[in-house]
Amino acid sequence: MLRGKRLTVLTGAGVSTDSGIPDYRGPDSPPRTPMTFQQFVGDEAFRRHYWARNHVGWRHVHRTEPNAGHRALAAMEARRVVVGVVTQNVDLLHEDAGSRNVIDLHGRYDRVVCLSCGHVVSRAHLAQRLEELNPGFVESVGAVGDVEIAPDADAVIETTSGFVVADCEVCGGMLKPDIVYFGETVPRERVERAYAMVDAADALLVAGSSLTVQSGLRFVRHAAKAGKPVVVVNRGATRGDGLATITLDAGTSETLTALSDRLPTPRTGDPV
Image 1: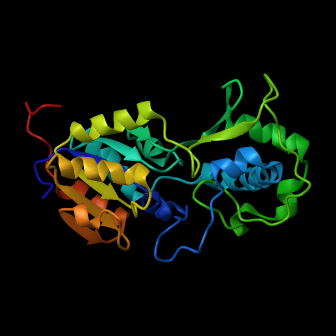
Image 2: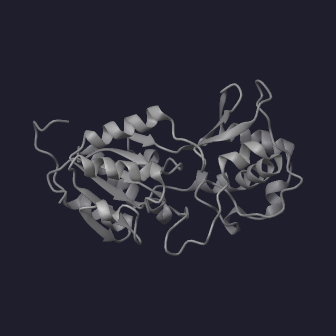
């Protein structure tokens, strides 16, 4: 189905599980209730709880490395088999693997934005401030390797009542990870760029996404409406299976590696 075609790839949390980052909806995933945008901005206790958990969890994501699936996609992009990647992940592992044309649909975990003035700082800089405000907090929780981590760098810990949250250094406003929360809207400009990337390819490959939320499913609908082949590779059923030309219940690392090995490089003179 994909031989001779140029692909846009839509990836979800299943692509990163082999790097040690769990997903939300895989067959073996524990039940999770992610914090919503409304909870974060509307309740100081929720916000404190989130930042305390994130203060621990982001260290885990920061030390993860790309797996064979990420590397296979980067290799296929280098050979012009892959046009680009639209990822629902915030872990930056596609970029770390060498992919260049990546749209981080739901944002990225390594940046923090002020909701009042828009000032952006690195998550590493905020970590230093939170460490100064909460000396010994991470050590009191235990080793990072022993703490359960969620896909958005949220650590599953219980005692957060004494945690001190940092405000914006510029205006004193509320800081939020540069991540699209549940209940929040993906910026329109980002969505339009993703649609354009789907339009630029001959087929859409979905890897490691259950397509449960509309932010990813819309690109499957868009490709199917345009008559483009849609191939879904995922552990378990997805919401887009009815729109797919082919579905494969399989792991992404081994499948993407096999595709990288077998799909031919486009002929010289083919459009880029």
